[in-house]
Image 1 (cartoon, rainbow, N blue to C red):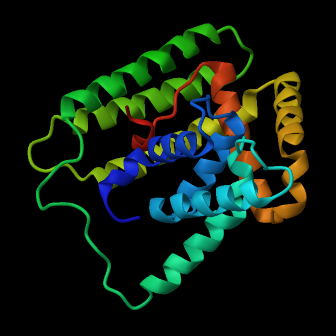
Image 2 (image 1 turned 135 degrees about the horizontal axis):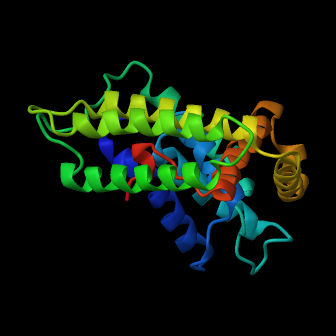
Length: 240
């Protein structure tokens, strides 16, 4: 995805969806999981917004959508994928655009330091809370915090920061955190979250491909486990 404005990916989609459905309501965990599947698949923001437009138009023309706002992004998945395919075909053979100005940095380093320190504090808090657990979760959280602290020290280095490489490091830490929580969550917590996602996806399963469903379920599970354990996302996509 070209251009560092894509670090505002989720906020842009969320606000656009609010406008389209005419209600400033909280985006559900399922909607966040769907947005994350689009981001991980590298679907450009323009394609997502175009797909939402098409889905909303289709929904309003349908019998069940007459006069009613669209409640979830799940209805938009096919339209977004279609718009992404069209954009990819249109861009074939074109030279990639560079959305960044030379020697510019997309974030204030002081704001990033504050973001990293907030996340370090939440990791430390969770590590203390679950220190009595008969598992290696506190140790895993401590290891992730140490790596995040290493990323924090990179912000003090002179010269232009390689934010693309920094994001790679943070993505790896997010993946490690996901594996740690999945391994150490209780059966009861996992069952509760599985029931949630099954209930929310029930009416959309027939129109989604198996691979798409599996990815949405995985992203939903990750988000809900973070909420259960009081832990943050670390990626720059969640920086605010």
